[in-house]
Amino acid sequence: MADAGVPRAGRPVRPFPPGEPVPPEEPAWRRPADGLRAYGLIVGMWTRSALAYRLSFVMMTFGNGALTALDFAAVAIIFGHTTRLGGFSLAQTAFLYGTSGMAIGLADLLLGSMDGLGQRVRDGTLDAMLVRPVPVFVQVAADRFALRRLGRVSQAALVLAWSLSRLDVAWTPGTVLLLPVMLVSGAAIFSAVFTLGAAFQFRFGDASEVQNSFTYGGNALTQYPPTVFAKELVRGATFVVPLAFVNWLPATLILGTPQPLGLPRWVDWVSPLVAAAVCAAAAVAWQAGLRSYRSTGS
Amino acid sequence: MGVYRAVLAGGFRRYATYRVATLAGVFTNAVFGMIMAYTYIALWRVRPHLGGYDETQAVTFVWLGQALLTTTALMGGGCETELINRIRTGDVAIDLYRPVDLQGWWLATDLGRAAFQVVGRGVLPMAVAALLFPLAWPSSPLVWLAFLVAVALGVVVSFAVRYLVALVAFWLLDGAGVVILSNLVALFFSGMVLPLTVFPGALGTAARVLPWSALLQVPADVFLGRAGGAAGVLGRLAFQAAWAAVLLGAGRLMQSVATRKVVVQGG
Image 1 (cartoon, rainbow over the protein chains, first blue to last red):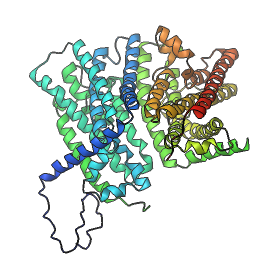
Image 2: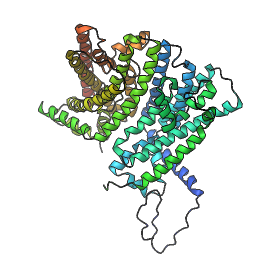
Image 3: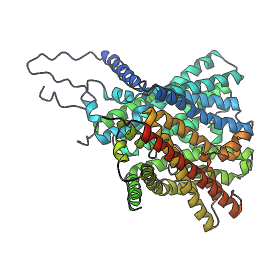
Image 4: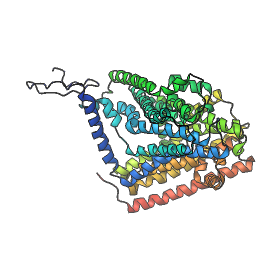
């Protein structure tokens, strides 16, 4: 145990006094449970701290929902001037808005503070996370957890519920199942994008704002019909950063709208597979980023 | 005046230091600008001349919004968070016994910030936009001059509002909630979400006389030649100047109440 005190990235290290028996490694199946427990503890801490200023917390939660509601106000004003945008009705656009908003809202709630990683790299506080016996990913994900972000999720859920009440959908068992599946897959895709962005910040911390282009920018993109955008942009959002799988493609099955790129119909069902693939890619990128981390030494 | 000039230069240099961050910001501006431009094009295709703009002008409006986003702090991000932190920690006591006026000090910092951002975060997104879309450029140098004055006045109005917001922290201590709400209002009533001329009925009328229209709608109308001749342009600039005077005055009043009645947090 010569190197017991030296933090190695990504692996919890517990220094044991010499002579004492080293306890056996925990079995692998315990680790995710421990990680989740740690996540819960950190989240609880930040929530209690946010509730210390109650009025401010209420204003922030309301503001968080209202901020995204403004996007919908824009949609509503646009549809005050026209009945169709890119061939989509208000209810259909609201469906896209609600599904995209819930997907990113959940990802933002669970690990939306990861964009603060660059700051931690810059001021050296990430080093403290490396020596704690909790996975770094869990600590970064739960860092400055903000319960106020429920505001965004609830607002998007309301819009989604409203759109479903207005839409005339020919529900089948498949499409009924597809709705929750697309929300979870969408949240997973956005989570992967958040994680990829954070991994990128290990090297380019100052460029953290680029991440916003893909997360919040992706949300702004997918809340409008794909027919509004240039084909290259839709292709980019399908094949490069697979945001089209958050809602554009699965929504065609529920709304009965045409497939934006004329791809085979089975593509509209594969969001969960795409989500799994980008999550795997994000995990690899995160490991690589963490391993390449060099402390600023301050 | 020498002190304020030095503080202003300091504000400029401080923001100019983070070049990579500026480039990253420009990239984000470009992405959002592109997404919004396409939605505007879709709308203006079905409703040409909506709000008095043709399609090219509408697209130009989008990019002016991206170019002024950080300059007139449409989503916040100027000095208010820092001032709030100083109020919460009690450091503001040090600021108060400096032989410089508190409001003047922060205004100078903010002008320095804006002076950098109009170049760093304003010119570059417009250059990107010019490569991607046809834009409606001003034909006369006088319009450019009037536009720059409108932007400068917009920055002062924006600062005056954010200063008021920051001072609320003397009473609430945690200003994060007020900042979020204030940014929200600024975003919506500046024209960043949609041009105010597109807002329906009374909402549109109200939005155009509120101070936030000085942040984007007025500079954009001057730029696009939608202010209506020289008299119209001067009228718009006077509108901005009036709001700047009123809000700065309100800031002074609130500052004197805060410093007389409120006990500074110690540590």
